[in-house]
Each structure stands twice: as C-alpha cells, then as structure tokens.
Length: 237
Image (cartoon, rainbow, N blue to C red; front, side, top):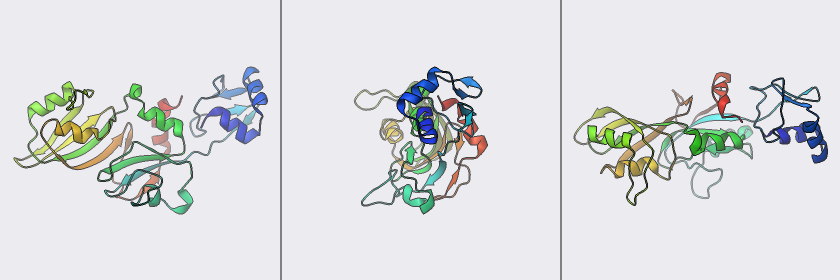
C-alpha cells in the first residue's frame, strides 16, 4: 500500500498535514525516517510509525490455481473469472491479477489488492522469472533448446529475451518441457514455440518469481504464507 494513502486513511490527515509529517521526519519505516510518500509498504514486512503511532495495512495476497476455461479478469459477460472462484467474503473490489493467463492456460495467478506490487513484479526491468510446464505437438530438439537460449525471433522480427528450455519427455508426436522466461509478451509462450514449428497443446504456469503453485488443486486458492510474503520483500519499494 502506498505510504501516503495509508497515512491519509488511518490518521485522516489532510494533504497539507501529510506533507508536514514527512517534512518534520515523523514518518518512520523500520526505524528509519522515510521521505518517499509513494513507497509501497506492508505491515507484515515493515514497522510503520507516524508521529509515534503504529500503522497496519490491510492488503490481501492470494495464490490461485486457474483452471482452463476461466478468464483472468474481474468481470466477464460470457466466461467465469478468477474472481468468481473466490469466496464472497474474499472478493475485494480492488483485487488485481498479477500476470494474465489465456483462457485455455492453467496455473498460478497472484491476486492482490496491492497494485504497486503487481506492477513491480511485471515490470520488464525486474526480470522476474515465470516458469511453465508446456506440452507441444512434436519433438523438442537440442536446436530448439539452443534457439530459446539465444532468444526466439517472432515472425515479424520481434526478439524475445533468452529463455531456459528444459526437456522432460520427448516422442515423435509430443514433448513435455519446462520453460522459464523473464518477460510477458502477448501469447508469448505459444508464439515462441510456433516460431520453432511447434504448437502448444497444454500450458501451465507453475511459478512467478519465488512463488510456487505446488500441490494447490485447480480452482482452489490460498493466502500467501508469511515466508512467501517475505520472499517478495525486495519488490516493495
């Protein structure tokens, strides 16, 4: 949560009063004077005190295993959404899906009310790795692995960042691989394999940065553990 927004909401300050608090050094984060009003803070990670008053944030963080057929959106007139999978009491109006998945793609979606965290996790400069299990309709070769490591070039000249492709199983008709990328172009994974003459027939995201899907069943969700939240601490700024 933005620090200035937190102070305004919890202490009912005016903009003028808020500015004065920062100018007078009365805003402390982890016992240090904080002068950045837009800093992203979380009371489960930071000690936040303003003029001696301890402030608590209320952002929520859910890991959800999106099934195929569900859209990554808050509302959709035709299809079930990731928000529809939540219990009514957990459907906060400001929930934000970090990292969209196609309707036919399964796997990890982070839902949070902390929009700044979502922005930073997806920003290209952060190069947050995203890991996928992928099944394609043909054999994956050593040449494919090398091409992904070099940076796949889409039809049209767009070049992807180097990606790590690990072969799991391979036959003449089908292969399963693990793929790790650090960017999120539109339909990127499918287009990368198409550029190598292969079609993705199953796609599942299993990790975003330090977050893992693990054994969470499709359609289920859970709150981040304290350890998982702490693993994201470097993305709060």
